Length: 125
Image 1: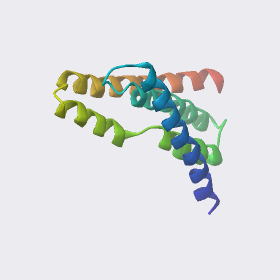
Image 2: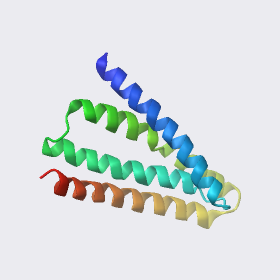
Image 3: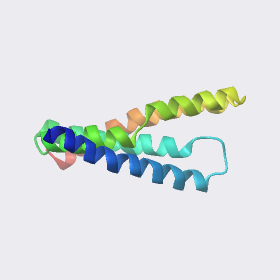
Image 4: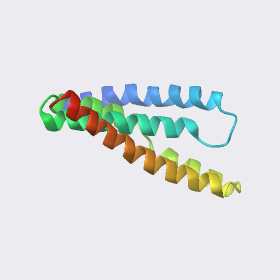
């Protein structure tokens, strides 16, 4: 039961941060491109890479993995919204933006995980 509470607590914070960050980022950009979703997905990927590196080095354990990895990062990042927004762009005729959204999200997300892992190797040798 404690594991479930850790995931739920992290998820509550992550979902709230996702909503607030998405709204703040989108308010600053006057385009149809989903900059807010891209931002939370890349930041979440960076955090998850850093956390994974910390767990692998022994600097973080089971509790951090559940609270921050599964809970916070799981709720902060959002594949379903990425998919929905990409489909919405394509359906409105913005096929180039839809393709750019997919490519940018995957490339930046994987790059962010790798950067997080590299940072963890330095921080938690």
